Image (cartoon, rainbow, N blue to C red; front, side, top):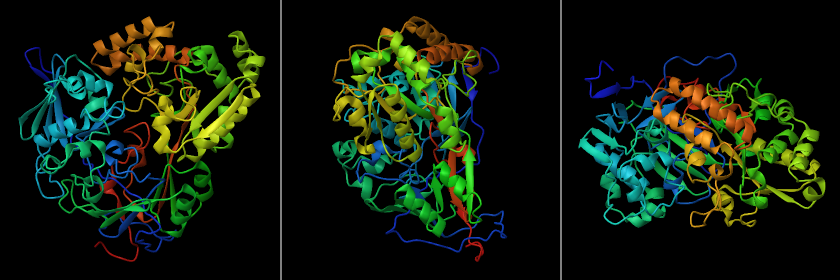
Length: 587
C-alpha cells in the first residue's frame, strides 16, 4: 500500500512453483505395477523420471455416486479437480488463480485467473467456469451444513440464492469482469473470507460448458451418471474408470498447465488399513497416508520403506458434546472439565501412540493464539469425580446415566481412544457405551437421526483451527450449532445463550473482525482462547502426528506442505510426485 490515494491494496501472491495434483488408491482388482523395490544401497536420481503407475491407498468409499458432496474429504477426486487457491499456514498457494487484490474498504476481492489452463476435453478454463462452479456448489438443492459456510453468507446475494428466494437466480456478488478476472463482493468486511472461502479446500472449479448441458437436479443431488462415468477437471490426471468398492483409475494429463506429471497412471485402491500395510510391504502400494503409529515404529528399519512424520497443530481429536443431551448436562463447563481429568491422555500418547502425538488443552493450543494462562487438564480421577459431585452429578446419578460415545472407523487410534474413554468413564461410575458408526451414517447420527435420536452424549471426530482461525465465530456469536440436529428442528439454546462469557466473547470477535492485520488480532484471539480453555467449549483431546509410509520408489513428496493446508493432511503436491524405477532411465 503506497498511500491513501490508492484504491486497492495489493495482495498479489508470489508465484509458487508447485503443481497441485491428487493421489488415489489401489485396489486388489486393479492392475498393479510392482517395480522392483530399491535396495538400501541405491539412491534415487535428483531429476524426475516419467512413466510407471502410482498406487495410492484410501481406507474406504461407500460406493455413493455423490462425489460432488465429498470433493476433498475422501481424496478420491482431487487428482482431477482443482481450486482457485490453497490456504496454508500463514501463506497461500495460487492454483487456478495467480493472485488477488482487496479494496480499501475490504468489500471487493478481485481474483486474477491463470491463463492457458485447459480442461481435460481441451476447452479453456475461464471466469464463466468460476461463477458457474460457485453457483453449483451453493445451489438451493444442496442443503446446509454440507454446502453453506458462514463466510459465504457475507457474499452479496449468496444467502438469498442459497435459500432459493424469488428472483435470486444468481449470486450477484460474484461478478465476471473479463475472461480472466472475477470480483467477489461482500456485504461486510470479513478477514476470514480468503482462508474460509476463496482458499477453502472444497470449492473445485467445474466445466460449465459440460455441466450446463446435463440435468441440474441430478447434478445437485449427486445422482448424475456424469460424476462416475466421465467427470473432467483441470488437474494433472484425467478420469478413466471407477469400479465401486475396488478402485478409481486416472491417466496422466499431458496438457496440464503445471507441466507434464510423472506417472502415466494413478490407481486409488480401497482397502482396510491392515490390508494396505501388507500391500505396501509387498510393493503393491506406494504410500499409506495417515498411517498408524505402531506401524511407523515397526517399519522404521525396513530398507524399502520411508517413514515420514510431521507435527500437527492444525487439527486434533475432539469430543464434541451434544449440548442438548442429559437436560443440558454438557453445557456445564465443570462437567466437561471432569471428562478431561478422567482420561489419561498423556499416557495414551506415550504408550499407545509411541509418543507420536501431543495432548491439547484448548482450541488454539500449540498455535500463536494460545491462551497465555492456559489451564492444563491433567489426569486426575478423584478431581473428575469431585467436579461432577459439585454440580450435582453424584455417584448414584452417574450409576443411572447411560453415557454414549460415537466414533466412525478409518482411524484405528481414534477408535482405540474411544475404547480408552469407555474405560475411563466407566470408572467415573457412568453406564458407558461406544457406538461405531460407518462414515456414510455419520451425519445422520450426529444430527439426531440415528438409533439414539438426540440423546447421544459425545461424538469423537477431527477438527481444529486449521488455516482458518475464524472458523468458530458463527458457533460462538451466532445461532449455528456444531452440525447437530437437522435444520428443521427448532433448537432450544446455543452456546452464546447459556455461556457466562458470551458477551465478552462476542466483543472479542467484534475486535478481531475490525482488524485486518493478523498480528493486531492476535491478543484478542489469545483472550478468546482463555475463554474456550476455561469453558471447555469443545473437549480437545489429542493432536496426532501425521504419518506417511511410502515405498522408496515414490519420490517428490513434501509431507510438511501437505499437512499445512487443512485440519487433516490434504495432498497439494501430487503433480510433483514421480515413480523411481532403479532399472530404467527416464521414460
